[in-house]
Figure (cartoon, one colour):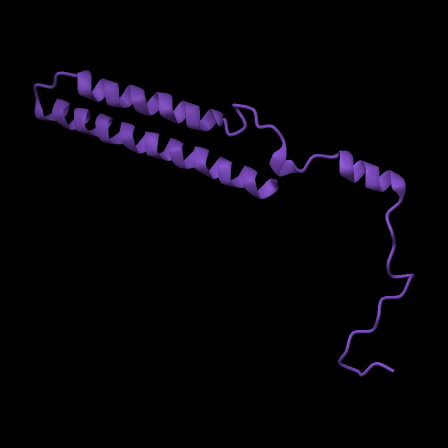
Length: 104
């Protein structure tokens, strides 16, 4: 007779063997981690918009010829804001990549 702290042996009712159909389905399925990845599996429209907007802001800031102090300030805001938007877009894309890894 087993002691109170030990595990009792598994009974046949608690343990079920898979059927032949289940075995064949498991063998024919491909694990999610090994599924072929498309080039756009981590594609994020939000990140793409961020990259385009950030690049436009940086380009606008660098190409403007400011003569007054206000124009120089606007130029600096455009360049700094553009780089900030590009960084946020990278964070967005990285977050999407991490969330898709948790699902698989």
